[in-house]
Length: 431
Image (cartoon, rainbow, N blue to C red; front, side, top):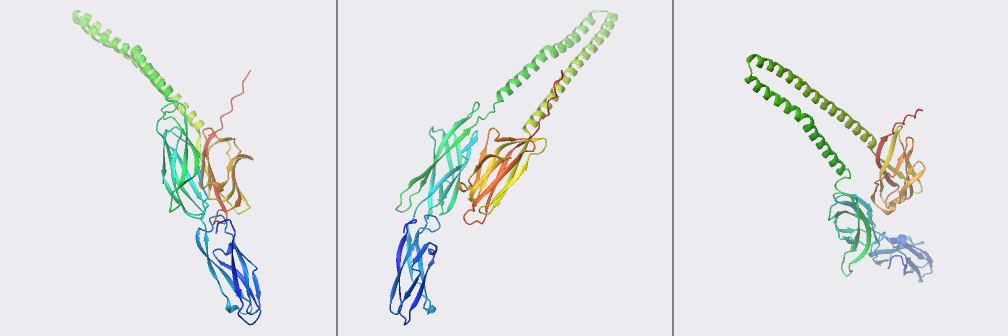
């Protein structure tokens, strides 16, 4: 039989007793939930026979796997229950395929490699082995999978890690967007040939290796080196040469003069040396004061930069609800702080419903958890939202139906970003 299409057979009951008998017919076995018997009760005279039609409709889902499935009908006589019988038959369920693929995240960022996860969902009734291959239209990327071949059981999902690596590097400049696609191909098995099942698209934003402020830092270093060189030639070197020159010329002149004159010259030379030493000390103290002032300014700039960046923020809220219910959690931005949201992770186990992230009562975006497994990751270059002191981060779950095999919807939302201090108010201008 073909899943989704009704199949019929007949069951015949014969009354070999001596009284009128009523027989109750009940389907049993793995297909009992999908079988209907009409009529469900047969009343037969002695030596009479009667028939009922058995209609079996297997849904086009993974609940019943392809192959031969045993089936039976329980025949229970009312007057003689000891004569119960169970005629059996074998039903052959034809295979069908229903596979889908999803790439998470759809867009990655990095200077050397982009990391993704591809999930394969098998909603068919037979195991399927698929092979993953990557393609990019510009032939500038190397796409690898771990593993590259996956066997997916009926009603289950399988995952593979994806590394998208550009062949060329960007040292400086603006980021470039690299597009690629992942082709999911069913591997040939037996008489069944291989075929392309689906294809998913992805992107990697390749960032430059050197940050944008590298050029400014090099220019600043060169300017500092030039300033120090100029200071040496303009201030320190002339002072040193002057002291050395005086120290050589005075003793030579003293040798040619008389003893009395030599003594007087030596005294004057000593006084000049002390003055030169004092000047050198003053110059060094000035340089030290200048260095201390520069160090203090650097500390102030570092403190301002740290205040602007703030402290990292990461909060995960687990949510759970029964079918038809909902759950939510709230976080209030502290007084004197501003929250910048830059990362959002949605976690799902396959339940049906809706996961929503809100700023106060305003929705910032959400996902349907039935369309992915594990984690759906979103990262933003610019903040997704900026919350002022007292604003609320609200995570909300609406549960329509739990995942197969579960009794409740269990999901989670994680929010990342940074908390920065509210800048001080500027003083009012005075007239």
